[in-house]
Length: 636
Ligand SMILES: *[C@@H]1O[C@H](CO)[C@@H](O)[C@H](O)[C@H]1NC(C)=O
Ligand SMILES: *[C@@H]1O[C@H](CO)[C@@H](O)[C@H](O)[C@H]1NC(C)=O
Image 1 (tube, rainbow, N blue to C red):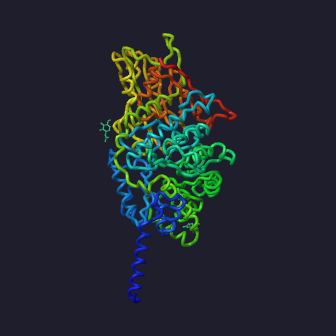
Image 2: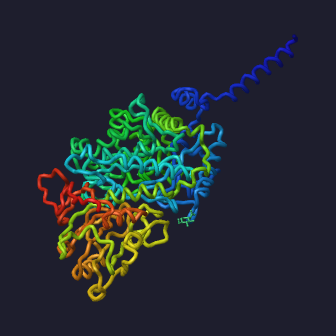
Image 3: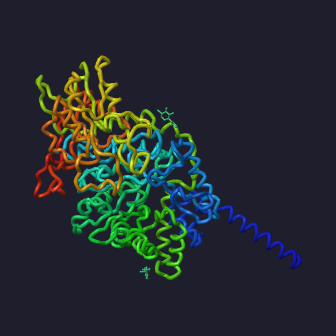
């Protein structure tokens, strides 16, 4: 062969070799071990691609082009952020797939991960099943004296599984749940997102993670994330690390003043349970611990969570969480990026100004204010979650699960959860010698009153369709307590509804008894902070005008204990229903005696707010109803 022919031959060899190499990409080979896939992919990535993985943006600012251009690693729906009004499963799937096509069309084709707050069912989605908020689920146990064995984590596990199915039905593989806050003060606007003031109840309720992600294999290494994709599971997120429920006076995002023993004894334990169950991600709290913003806390994020607790998933910020490291927020964004990434955050929920974040992070790396090894740790963790859950093999969703959204099976499960989350706080004998509850289904005429009796939005609370929730009916499908009562009573019983009746109406109506359903208006986060915790008008007036005149049972629809002592003596019976969600029949099932009351308070019910904070185990403990209280009744 002449030189020219040799050269040509070599060229062909070289070309075919590089062609073969580009055809076989180790990281795309699911038969390769996880570590080898991560290593192979990391080796191929540019800095811009790595930074993109660490960037989470809001769907409203996202497009397939943006995802492609900036190598965006994750997109979220913020509270109430949907592709449109009353979007169907296919609207959601199409939207998520559209963004995903942007990610898949990049050089390396790394799939993005879409996340959403599914905190009591898939609560942003029209017609989804809305389960009781966590404050209600915390009381679903049989006997307070034997707390550990008699709690019912099997129920929350089922709720987790149902939620995962509805979330996957919309093409979404990741939820920002569960909230494992230990709410130590009901003045906190997020107290309803907490299962209990008692950390052992919160620890047990982390079983919802197994429902969301699937059962972690026995031989798993501690701290490694796990999601059972084939069983239609989703990645979960334990939040908000750490001490979110312990802020001063319950002020949202404020300072948690507590010593190390207190932090590790009360607020930390449920993170251990979550990590053992393979939780994929942990979200950092807006709050501070003894004056240090958690989003900038290197000791607790890097040394404790990633070090001591061996958490191997990724750590995500809260929404604009790094902005709030400075006061006022966003005063020095470069400082915020530096502090948070160096503290150990892996993914930043930016969520809008991704240019500023990406530019800022790029500069800090160039200035060596943030090391490449820190970036590599972050990206490795994000890729580990994406690989282990199977996102590379299954990046695109379809509509095969759409019938799961709000399906009867899930609504039945939610109805059961409502039944088990009711707590009977008072049940006096009435004239005939029987106790007020259960109510007779057979009566000539009964009265239902109150702002929460025929109001699905009030019944669901915050984080329902909208971030702050919605008052009224028509927000989604479900059954109000009034409709549930109407279908539960005897066909000959006349049910009269008056939202806010005057005394004469009640007195002269010839009613056998009255059911009063009052409570809090929907709220979320800071808007729910309340220093007085009073039942707002017309709640007290409705109680007075009704219970002052005829035998009544009051059902409270609230996210927490509220001031109730002043009205207590006028009521024959009192039920805490918390925020039950869309399945109001769970309430009628129990008040009419088809099922007994079993719930026991997972929160201390105070007499007056000047007692707060007051929690079980406190030296000075003088509650209206103690932690663990709840009258039991039998089904009739
Ligand atoms: C929502 O649920 C209602 C009541 O079950 C049903 O009539 C309606 O068709 C559903 N809408 C969508 C978009 O799924
Ligand atoms: C922002 O923070 C950085 C890093 O601490 C500091 O060097 C810089 O001066 C700050 N900028 C402003 C405007 O305060």
